[in-house]
Amino acid sequence: SFYRYKGKCRFRVHPKSVIKRKDRLRVLTDRNNGMSNAVREDKYQQYVRGWVEYFKLADMKGLLKSTDEWARRRIRAVYWKQWKKIKTRYRMLKALGIEHWKAKELACSRKGYWRMAQVLNQIFSNKIIAKLGYISLLGYYLTVCEN
Image 1: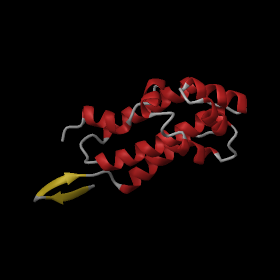
Image 2: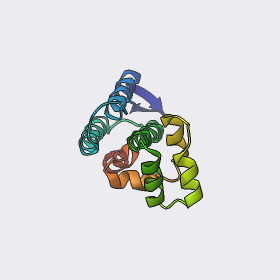
Image 3: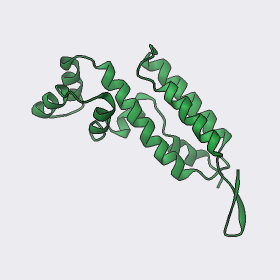
């Protein structure tokens, strides 16, 4: 859609397209499907690249920043669910560099996946998520944007 900014006509992503994107990312980062991590990463990358390339003329920096935070939290929740047992959670947290007592405390937590994904924000950082193969919407937009 169009809007005016300082007397110039600019583009923005239509709200229906934003809703469709969020629904698609919801499907790709679903905790309950049997998709392997490699397939999930590939499909996520393909979708992000395609969507950003299609809408690269639009002004959407703030929109992509908030969507990135939400998508990364969903990815953290996926991994937390995959580490089903306390022993596995403890081992993975220790591998991420957490102290013994803190890893034990988090591994034994009875909070839900969404809540624990928020707690893991500092531990399971954006750099780690990028290394796993999940590209940032905002980062990719900034490399290809024409504004």
